[in-house]
Length: 131
View (cartoon, one colour):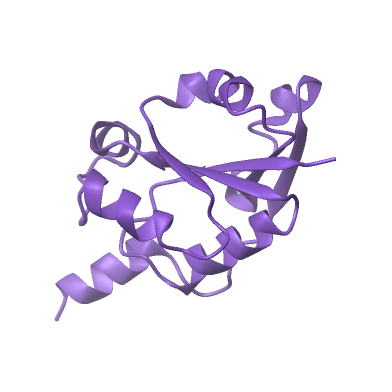
């Protein structure tokens, strides 16, 4: 039986941490669907616009081996709708979100994966801006 995995993220300034979480998410099923945060959502969530546009981030994520489908995540409040729309069997998120999505355990498995140590988009952007 085929298992669909869904995950979400901004995936701005794409780095090895992003690659690893997508690879590990894909290993939890047969099909990986990725919600890429809309520019407006990222601005609301993080208080800054992404470095790369929504269209660029969608193109980057869709080019990653193991990613089967991408879509724009318009709102954090629509997670349940996205899970249902894509008939996801598993929701995978980074462990910085641990416990935040347990409520979806009634419709899918919820898995939190450890983040790749010593790498973050925010830290990279800060480092680059100091150059």
